[in-house]
Amino acid sequence: MLSGDSMGAASLLRLLGCITYHALLLADCATNSTAYELRPTRLILQADSRVDALLAPLQFPGFAISARGLRQVSGAVALYVGDFELRSRHLEAALFFPVPPTLRFFSPQDELRNALKINELQNRLLQYRLQNLNAVMVSDFDVPTLSGSSRVVAQMLGQCIVDAPGCQGRVANLLQSRDEESRVERSSGLDAVIIEALVVLCHEQRPSVHLGEVAEIANALLTRNEEVLKLKPRKVSAIMKKMGLISCRLDSGGRGIYLLREQCALIHRLGSHYGVASLVQGLPGCPHCRDK
Image 1: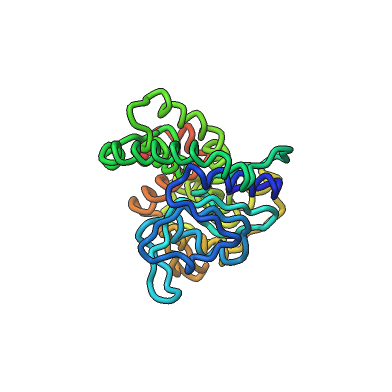
Image 2: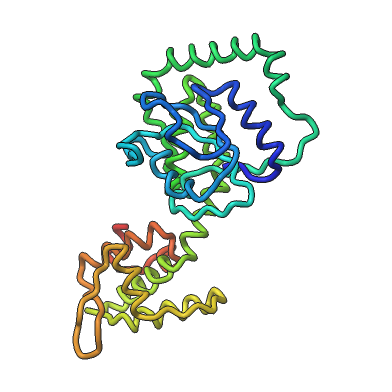
């Protein structure tokens, strides 16, 4: 994803078109204008409301769109978003690059003047792809110190680098700040706050807990973070359900969940994923803290 100067972004996309495979420069995010068999690298100059719906099929192979019949449209994408506000949940799998203003643009005339050099570079890149395709397909490169989408992005980038361990090693360094930012966002979101509240209740060895009690502890945690939002039991129930924690009617006090061994184990796994503060050290003697 590109943001910043629009002229600079247009110039950068044109330059990328000279070195990428099956480059397709687009003024918008249309996908139906390409042949069914073609898997181009889409270089899109302007985002619009359709982008949110297309991010998933564009990024993830195997997911199709249904317009004019089922079509696979996945492939590499560089998109200038400018000031357009994207809302898709799949943004976390994207990389964002600001484009500063520039005084020197890569124009169609520059492309014509350098046609021979561009063609030579494209041939060398194609040769590299053909020679190393099998090595890329079987690569097990991984960066376990990263988490979530940062780890997935690192795998995709690192697997494409062959016989260059130094370059592969730098992938982790380039994504470290992105990973740290993602961890902070995960640990401060509503999902994480509710999971931390449930971890506290698990450590109190409660047999069950009402949604109102979860909301009360979650709101105290939000106050700790200087948030003014107040969660209600119904909202807590909806968020818990999304994470596989289904509430039921406990008694005359209302709905809640039983904190059985299986539920506590799931809560601790979720807490580890979200990086909640109460699991950094864990609780001595808690079997779930030991096994997470």
